Amino acid sequence: QVQLVESGGGLVQPGGSLRLSCLASGFIFSSYPMRWYRQAPGKEREFVATIGAAGSWPTYADSVKGRFTISRDNDNDMVFLQMTSLKPDDTAVYYCSVRLSIEYFGQGTQVTVSS
Image (tube, rainbow, N blue to C red; front, side, top):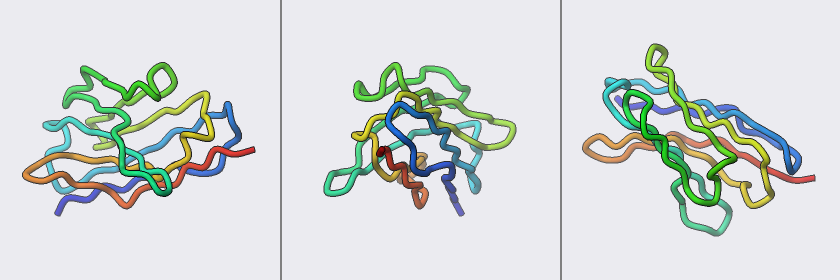
């Protein structure tokens, strides 16, 4: 079955950096684009970034453009989100996802940006 396991979240001060990882299994990872979403308390889940199957065409939400970088390692079935210049508004649970017949999400990893 499809499994997505996120890691790398934590508490960081404003202006700091974090690198999130997502380990995928249960599908041919190198054949599918991957996405990151986030959900802040009391808000709907929102798109953060996507990357093509071969690592091409990274695309970002305007709110993170220039600060976040999505990448992937097709040899190890992993996708990453490097986050820099973090702001309190980036506080959320971050999820990786893949769209097959339906869209699958992992369990999420908490990112808290606070001084």
